[in-house]
Image 1 (cartoon, rainbow, N blue to C red):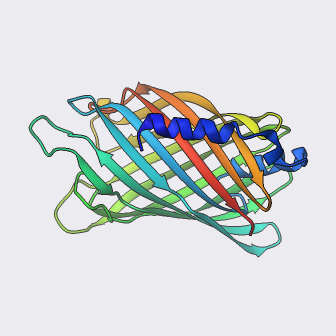
Image 2 (image 1 turned 90 degrees about the vertical axis):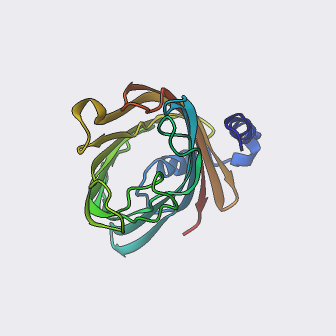
Length: 269
């Protein structure tokens, strides 16, 4: 599906009549805040499409689709174990002049496990994250096994959901052929302001640093924002948003700008 078609689908979903939300406006806002919490005690299946423009020497378009199921388990009281898997499917344009052409396939899978505590004013979670060398092609993944720590912290005052997710992954073994070692940091700040009838404003740029790269090639820093809406359908709900980003920093061949579209199915636990 093209980027234009995905945006048209999102627009259709976001303009569904307000009756789909039911008459529980307060409950809808509370559920929207849960959907914006990456370690909420809520089963969800986010499917996120990232369209990156200006990638590679030919300024191609890269498509990255992430399927990110989140399954929580109650440990006791306010303590939960949150399992979060990120499965990427990638269409990669040519990365070098005269090199391999466009490539399509699965990238490296990234599972994370958070022990989470829910307090009155703050939610936090921490645990391990892993890098699994599942890519179909060497251009789509690292070829390395990796692991490291990950953590999330957030607050939810009033209509706001504000926090950040961070991790660092180091490689510890090659999956076969010799490939560069991995030492990469990810920081994802997020800020959401919830409006009426399930609508909200949102910004959640994903900032990364490849510590193995040269200093001028190290950072990828997008800046941008968007909007979304949560819609209830009986005991299930659909949370959708769109965001657009420019780049304050990116490595050579990195994107000039991006569009992110996410649809997140929320299921009763």
